[in-house]
Amino acid sequence: AQSVTQLGSHVSVSEGALVLLRCNYSSSVPPYLFWYVQYPNQGLQLLLKYTSAATLVKGINGFEAEFKKSETSFHLTKPSAHMSDAAEYFCSVISSGNTPLVFGKGTRLSVIA
Amino acid sequence: EPEVTQTPSHQVTQMGQEVILRCVPISNHLYFYWYRQILGQKVEFLVSFYNNEISEKSEIFDDQFSVERPDGSNFTLKIRSTKLEDSAMYFCASRVGTQTTDTQYFGPGTRLTVL
Image (cartoon, rainbow over all chains, first blue to last red; front, side, top):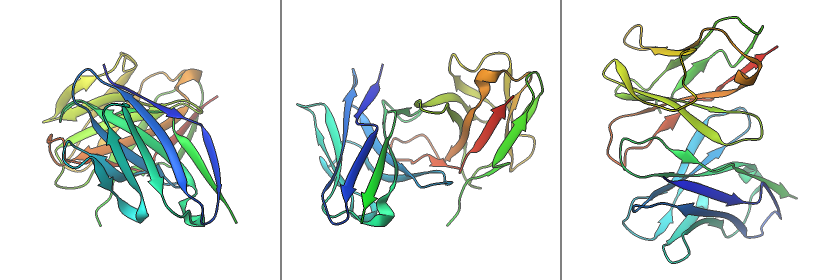
């Protein structure tokens, strides 16, 4: 069975600082990994996904994530935080095309001016 | 850009009442999902639906729950007799196919409060 663990339910950074949101996965088969973002009163929006091509994945809004098999990690980063990045971020995993997404608990990102 | 829509955005109901949550998936999508998130907990899978039948369901999706695609556009989740523990945010998602690269697109959610 697949699972993901997001370290830190709340992360606070200053505007312009590096954003690092941590996600570790557990999977008995090669995983496919996703980061979703939820802005207040909106649905979950896909930021980026890893589907066994390049290990460094670039997404929308300047975010990227690196798949590290040796560390079973898929951490999300952004070099410079913007106020508009304040949201809830969810890491998720899927084992194959038709199986449902398995989500982490989410990390709330706050950006301080 | 096409999007998944859900109504209502917030539903308050009394314990034991039936509720129907509605979703309009993206028009050319074939797979539909319901997830829920109890406050402070993970987003959890409830059920997937394809070709007018349930494809997969979780342990949460017991006999109190049902899904339906009553017409060509709507996808509904019915809870027959709501319990306090059904209070959660319910998300609908749709997907064009089952390739791993096919993204699940989520709606904004319906917040269900059971009193």
